[in-house]
Length: 244
Image 1 (cartoon, helix red, strand yellow):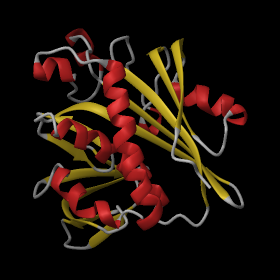
Image 2 (cartoon, one colour):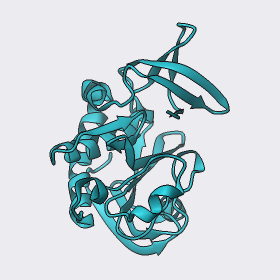
Image 3 (spheres, one colour):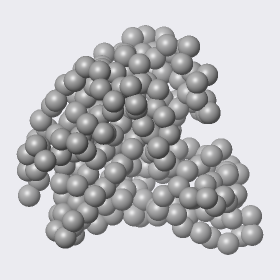
Image 4 (tube, helix red, strand yellow):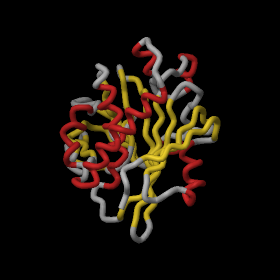
């Protein structure tokens, strides 16, 4: 049974919190949540093995924990972390949107992303839930990606405290995780729809090596996405990426 308490590990400069957690997994207390946070990453990774630019001044963390195999909607757990961050930023007056499944946007620019790796055994899931938040990133990095990005500092014109943001995120995530473990994604469904970006817009969507165009038809009660394609056919996805 998972004890909803967090053990923090703080590091300076490493390749990535995700890779570090995977290497050190055997040393973690499986009854607790381990959170690895680094000041800087030299090989930060995002979804689909994309490079995540990771200079100092931002927040880079990976949450590691194990869950029993009977947990429902397990592949929506990355969305739970996204909702947690969106919730604390909304309380600060920011109009945060979530691009399905778990990129966070402010003023149509990406300011945070989540990477979810799940390893399953016969009786449990090992969760590696990574998050990168552009808190105080300098503008010089914004042009180094293939999509519009920004930082909270750039959008709000103030400095952000990394440790305070981490504590707030952890507290909100623990609250949400407790609900998720009991009831799955359903209690978060309506709230996630409120945060959802690209509603009522034509989108271009990638799934593996296939591409689809259409509109978001609905978010399902398990967190999956249903698109209404240009052919009017409905198609449901459990992973993938909204390109634009």
